[in-house]
Image (cartoon, rainbow, N blue to C red):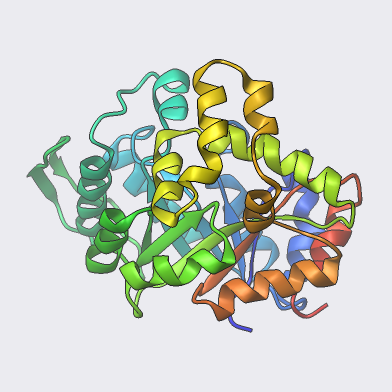
Length: 317
């Protein structure tokens, strides 16, 4: 087994209560700790702490939106994260969604491909210590230079769901991060990304043998996420358009309950790993065997002790 990541913080668990777990992860065979940024913690603080608790762990953001921080602030945040983690940091950036960008952060969600590309190009220059004066398609920067650039090069991964962004990730970044991906979808994504770039995948894992409960939770999450236009287009491209059409129609009609009920079991089973702990570990390993370099578990709550589940899911358990 190669890399194996965990998303922190765990659902409902205060950040500082993760110390003992994170300190054990390397011995359990985990290589990475990744954070997300929606409406809970910010992306950087949990990683700064994790790096102090586990001196060998690699940290990464999956992802930081390119709209919610100015370009210079994003460069400063990444440089600081690289410093406090001793260089064990990967910056994952992406466009995020209209809800997070526009409704929650009062920013314009326009031209997401170009904004991500422009931010990537700016960050490459800024994190290398260059003084940046540049007019990009979606913003301009005049005379910015980091006071203390990272001592080591910071890898940058792009949140990428379709061919255009996957190719950009291969050509100008260090790799791609995917979300809501089935294990059997990996070869198609890998074919667009190419063999050399890193592919990280955030994988939703619900360790329970109560399939009805796991599917109920999965349907709720899928109806919330996959109705976002970018995810809808992603799953059209992956071939799930017909299977998800009833969900989209009910959602468009304003019937959230019917939309959730319309998600087929087979789609949930593709996109949410569930079953016994051993079955879940084996299914996550399939992502790796199909071409994912860094599977990153996002643990879904089952009512069981989450710390215990993480320990049991680890490849060295």
